Image 1 (cartoon, chains in turn yellow, purple):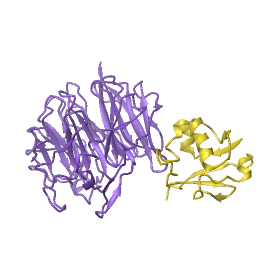
Image 2 (cartoon, chains in turn red, cyan):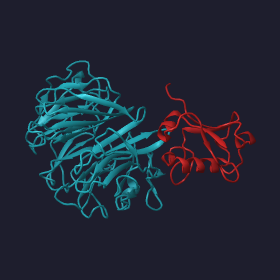
Image 3 (cartoon, helix red, strand yellow):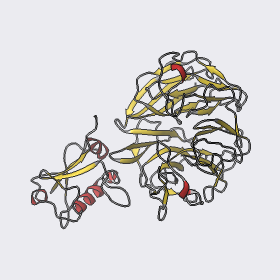
Image 4 (cartoon, one colour):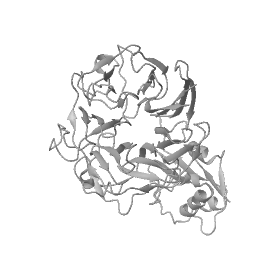
Length: 98
Length: 371
């Protein structure tokens, strides 16, 4: 069971409260987790990764176990703690407000 | 009794304002999509309860929302706006080639005849069409591909396709406008396009009479005369009497001919409205006085409309899609400001009153007249 924490606006779009939990088949990578997230919540397609290119949107970052993993390959394995559901994958938006 | 519904897009959400035909008391619903930029909302002429909304954010990209009950409930539909084929490049601000990148939808224009058909004007400039109520989108790529696309460049607000006008008498004819490329027309439903900028004169570009490169801010048309177009250009108010084949300036006695919004009276096709703005670097009214100017002669002769509008210390802007008219017997006219006010007039502009004063900055206003 993979846990994903989304920013408020994306929780509103997905109509969820709190963390999202997902089953991911095969290796647990950023790509496979985001694929599973978008498959379960198709309204999130294009909001985290661009349609078409699947590039991370520039004002978003990914964190796992307090590490910024935004720039690692989307096919690199996520930490064991994320894979085992002990830690969430965080999707974080740039802070706004000045 | 007839009703009027105003669809107001703001920097931080959507609002729906409704009134009976007297238009003196308004109910305010919203914010819908709180915290998101709502560049535009518009209802279908076929079914006025079918609304489309463009919801976007720098963080999370583009969302399209649809309502089938006049804005009470909304359904997220498709937002996959992919350019047809290899997108290619347009010019960047410094003249270097820059890849076409989708950023947002500025304007949604529902079909005049099919409830599930709707057009979307995008930044970077492109025209998209949906035939399934917004679930899927296809680019009408003949526009970007007609030849001048690589020479288009963005205005300060981005390279946006912000105006879409469907000809009510000729289903194949569509007018669009792009900042800062100019106006374009198709006569075959979007397959082929041509620039329609002859007569435009823009200081500050290398060739002031260039075929493309003009910063057209908005175009308006009266449905009874689809060959007659009125344009608020960056500077200059223009008109065309031949479907855009040529334009003449009708700024006349306007105190400044810079501005964004322009619209036509619902029942008087020669009566047009603009909101003069001081200049391109000072986006507020002259002398702190918010004035709508009206011409009853299709331009050149203008009169200020000020009753009920602030006549001192007012430094708001009125953006290109933020003015609209209803079609009640006494034509109502409405506009929203970057200060969050929406002003309304139920007597064609003679007197004004604020409908709401404290919304987020208003990006767009569309009026619907309901039976």
